[in-house]
Length: 151
Image (cartoon, rainbow, N blue to C red; front, side):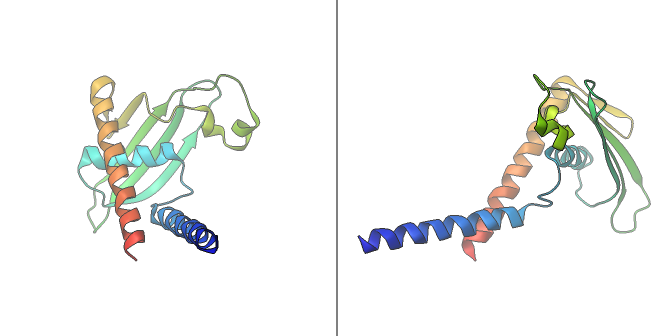
């Protein structure tokens, strides 16, 4: 009986440590998933993750698409800069208290259109870009979990 209690306590402690490690492994756990996905789409399309994000803003104009706007300069002294917007369709069935606390929660988590430096992604090209970004996010999560377990 005592061994079972000890095992449960050890399992609970292990789960707590892994969960804490995963949260600590996130790039910015307070960042909305739509902002993170928009940043990852930019990185995937431009083939680099070396950005200095100079502006990140969101607009939630009621029942119209939410807009995530990004501006950046490339890290490492490169003078090139860029901008992107990601449009997320309104996706709520009814208004809730959650939406008052977090207005972006009323919108889809996958964009319907992305504009990066004047180039528009829609349809299959956007679906492929989102799939690639999600794969990168999954790899990052697995890497963070592996590091946490290995410590």
